[in-house]
Length: 363
Image (cartoon, rainbow, N blue to C red; front, top):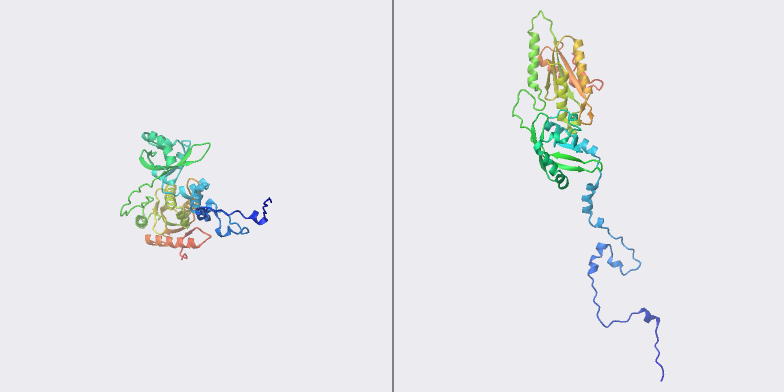
């Protein structure tokens, strides 16, 4: 009996046997191909370039944008100089239970004249004793959950001010530090009309200043003719770089600081007043001679050279000062003020001089 032989060809090796049963294929995974950067049309082409897989950051750009600023390192000095100093919210920085910084709004709220009087003092010295336990018990929650807590502070004069504070933790491996940010304080309602004094600085306003100039002139005009007439000087002051203070939101701070400096530095019989177009006016009666007047003007100019200092920086003051003198060339209160304004304008247009004394030739 002849043996049966089987011939196997190369084609048969490369061709899998056909199945007689139906094979079920799950194609749902292809629906997610694009999420993994796979081009379906290139699957059949072995030489097609493979697309780059999409990373999670690329698929969710909005999440990356949200987290970007949260992970940035920010220089605290920049935040203090640009934001905290000029903020209307009272802000106090505490390190190891001691005050290391407070902004102008906090000083104003607590009626603190100089920051150095409380720097490095225990923070609890500003807190009403009844609230000590409340603060120490809740500071942890304030730092971790952004919760708000009302704390009653006591000013150096004994006034009690309740303030709602949020707390911000300052990462520091050597110290326990945090920032307390208070809510906006309600400002006192201004009177509808005050015809005597400026609301911001407490100085006489311009209308009262005009009246005092007139009284000073009348006093010299009606003086006994046997007595020598004294000089009267009217000085108008313009702050040429006031825009710099406005940008830093320090204009009110500058005006208050400068008004206090002028009042404390000049003679008590002088009148320092707030103006309308020009921020400050000064009336100097009873000047004996031109030499004494020159000394007084130099004293004022030196005050401006000192600039305005806040907690960290001294801000330059650029001023234009106009001076008019009674009885020559001004013969009346109205002329004194008009000629001072002309002198201010000349000083503004004269880069070589920051003050001008009015003469007949002054435009």
